[in-house]
Image (cartoon, rainbow over all chains, first blue to last red; front, side, top):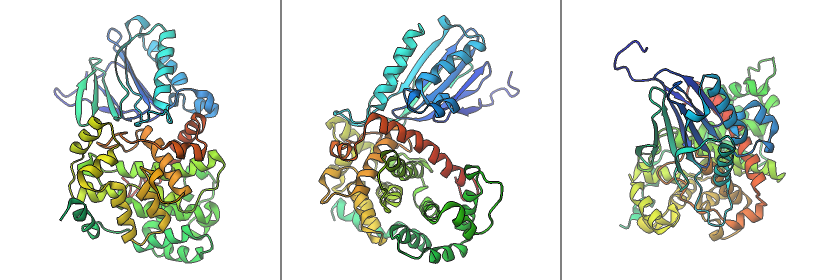
Length: 167
Length: 285
């Protein structure tokens, strides 16, 4: 229980290539500047366990040393790490509500910089293999996004272009 | 007076960088110049000296013995690296402020500028190409036109992005249609008025449309590519978002592949952290 009634919940920032996992509490997890990166918010409403990750690149094979030091940098090492941490907090796969944001691109019809598209493809495949459906997503386009996960409720909010909306 | 003329008449409103920094940029640009001179200048500037020493003593270089003078730091880091610190420190007050019109909170343009500067370096390393002396400075200053437009002329980017999205054109092209000038040209005019090296001016001038530049310039190609990667990473993105069109010609000239792009991004993140750690101190954000 937080001490002060009506005190604003603490905001915990998840940096690029980082993740945070919480059990219970009133914190709001937030990650800024999702461009081509992907943000994944996962929440189990029964266990009240939730986590947020900000992955920069799709596949860890590009730099195994970095992947070992910072698994959250890559989708293929970060998202499994996120899921495992949640399971340790008592979350169950079938109850997990997973929401995704990011994977933007430049105005790039020629496909010169495909990082966003690759991040999203690898993420979808990985979740599918893990039998996890994406409950909601806000991906693609030419915008940067901020993603919030409210630990008290699992509410997920996207802020982009000066506007906020629930995901 | 046209909107374009109005923009160009306001160049003097933007405070220039300190003289010591301009000198550092000129030295950085010219490998034959006397680095001793800049070291001397540095020793008389306590703020810059502090930053240089902080970097030299940072965990990144992880040696147990602490250095206490700029000369010792120069031995440990190399003159080139020290000059970069000076340039980065000097540019910080210019690019660190928020830009209301472009929806950039304080620190965001700095974050983007720094990531493009270290991005040129990272790209050259991954490509095993020689890095032109002007690339770091050009990366750091390529977007200063946004300061002129967004702060001093209070241009509202919201209307411009609307046009860009509905017409599927780059944000810079929408700027040109609405204002008669884009932030790249405005920035180049500003850098020219500060008497910065021609390569730095040209890279800023054409960074969103390198195909239209009058000549080939490796600094420009590197800034264009590093800018694209930095935007992709979402670093310091304002209302204009990722609404820019990358150049295929640059991608081909540099030999960018998915692998090169991703390796570069890994390095940028590390190098950016090094710069940020240095700033997580008095005078930093």
